[in-house]
Length: 167
View 1: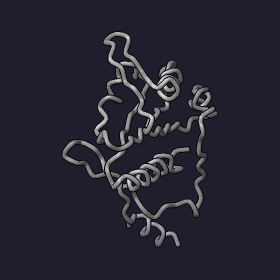
View 2: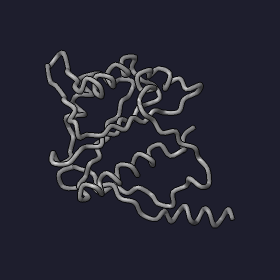
View 3: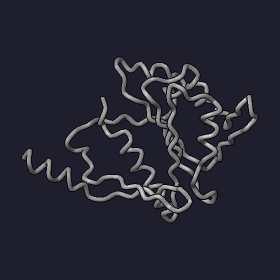
């Protein structure tokens, strides 16, 4: 189900990591789509805009339709610790201090999740949508001159208005 707060939860976790590191930006968002190959993924990972002095929180945002080899790519990235583009020999090395958040989309009969057998053995957080889980704050992204994004949270005034109208 869309809208259970997967991205919101990840941004909240990244915001907490960011605060532990002097409010330095740590978010690096990488999308994996149907057309993503190893060259595109290596290129996206190497375009990390965060300062090298702080850990990077890499948000792997998976699409509903994925290439058949994406499970292997995530395994190589997280367990082996590197990805290599065989055509250009460009290599991405995972740093020990970095964090990975893999956002698996909701699909009918959990089709996308079942395709990702490696991801299913990783530690995971299950999210449930309920009134108690609604965060009254909204993630806000501020871009620095170097392209790095700082994640902050502010009061979601629209949510309050909707809540008042429904009450």
